[in-house]
Image (cartoon, rainbow, N blue to C red; front, side, top):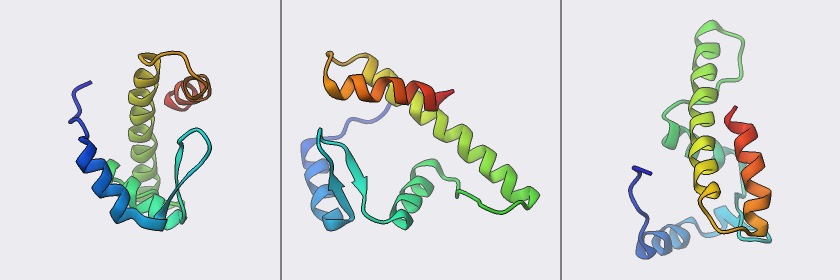
Length: 101
């Protein structure tokens, strides 16, 4: 898909460093314990802060954030489309497709 592969060592290092900031739900879904951490990760990955005000510059930043976020949902939808049928795929694929549009 054009993105760097995550090695087992990278993943183990990340999970160890994240500590209690992440928790795992049934089925392996990872969630952030605090919303501010989620916002920081989105800022880091997408490069755009999620703006909440009605200021024109903030609205433009928000629109850019929504567009980039939809792109990542498309990447995830493509990923789940290529996986073997499973409960996780059944849950994720429709959601990722909906969020990509």
